[in-house]
Image (tube, rainbow over all chains, first blue to last red; front, side, top):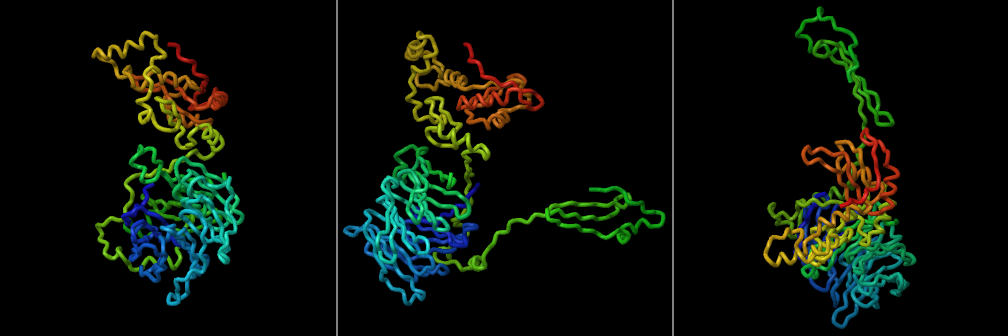
Amino acid sequence: MRPILMKGHERPLTFLKYNRDGDLLFSCAKDHNPTVWFADNGERLGTYEGHNDQTAKLWDVKTGKALYTFVFDSPARSVDFSVGDKLAVITTDPFIEKTSAIHVKRIAADIKDQTDESVLVMKGPRGRINRAVWGQLNKFIISAGEDAIVRMWDPLTGQEIMSSRDDDNHKKQITSLCLSTDGSHFLTGSLDKSAKLWDSRTLTLIKTYVTERPVNAVAVSPLLDHVVLGGGQDASAVTTTDHRAGKFEAKFYDKAS
Amino acid sequence: MQNGIQNKVRWGELEEDDAEDLDFLLPPKQVIGPDENGIKKVIEYKFNDEGNKVKITTTTRVRKLAKAQLSKKAVERRSWLKFGDAVHEDVGARLTMVSTEEILLERPRAPGTKQEETKAAADNPFGKGGAVLMVCRTCGKKGDHWTSRCPYKDLAQPSEGFIDKPPTDGPAAPATATKGTYVPPSLRAGAERTGTDMRRRNEENSVRVTNLSEDTREADLHELFRPFGQITRVYVAIDQKTGLSRGFGFVNFANREDAERAINKLNGYGYDNLILRVEWATPRSS
């Protein structure tokens, strides 16, 4: 297999996302320009320019225009639209004296009505919150991050509904979280060299996939019973160890067996 | 498919030049199907070079190819104007290219051998299903690295290689080396003890296969024995002069039980018109 390589970013990639039809691929990196590509041939459609620190931005996908900027007092880490796109969840990093937080913003139907006001702010977990996503029917928000605990929040009250049990928990920080297509379960990947499949209603651990490298990214196949784990040692450690120790392959696992 | 001559055209009644226009004499083309299995038959008649009427039946299977469904919106998005940096992109920028490196999808196990392989993977301390054939001959680690890349190569104890030899041999070799006389690389301190290691390896769960046909290659043997379990080595003896197979070979299994099952199953098995003889390889007497 000869994959298509897209080299638009100058800094390490942080996030990739397909649109629902799968014809567009959005990529984010540590440079400031999110980029959109045609998924079928890898042609670059455009770059979204004008991002600055400590903000989250709403963009017009088609023209690349920034529609609105949410300003925070610490770096924004992850974003996710709710089902129906009426709400968005944005997590912010701990910064100087601020603790990490999960913000819920209402997305106005008309951009003129958009406000910066948070519907809810949830605080509590220590360390960065690397991912926060909406659960089934927007009934809860699932978050995971540096404290290695998976938490579930009520998006109406802002209360923590439950968190994963101690014996089930990852041993090191959770780097990524991916909800299945139907939302019934989700996958977390961690630097403790494992990925875990959870029931998203009860937060019970369904399965653990053990691998021999820190897991940086996970994905659940929308069609097949597959999960993919991507990983490898931290980029900063590459120069200090043998190149063969890196283990940068992506691994496919059967979801169930 | 030519179904033979239907009837002979009487050439006497026709002029030679008219041959092209004789088609009106032929029955019309018939198309039958496609039926529920996708079989479609086309029956045509035509004149062959000798002027004989020939019936041609073409049977084809019609298959519907999976059609990629593109939503209307996705089609519309295809014609969107570029924006941002992409506007000024020159053709030579080559941001998008097909990888020059071939990326292989390694299958941890062949389909249909599920159970055995999972067992094998469990045996493997590294849990790396895809690399079960890797056995380092220097340090003996399975599935971690190839011999040539052994990180412990330099650490291989020089004494280990001399175990099989008379004790007097051991100190002799390094001693000569210091004097400056030639010492073969295989005897130098720190060298890979391939010679002795190979012999030891050969005796590990080794199965001898005899009465092989001359055409049998190592790949064939591997295919034949693979279903029984993890194989670490396959060897077919080749005659140095003629380059032909000498009719026997060895297969090493990672697990003794797998080897035993292979022997039970394949001893007396008909392979390439010959009856195979499969047995435990007797340790080589030196």
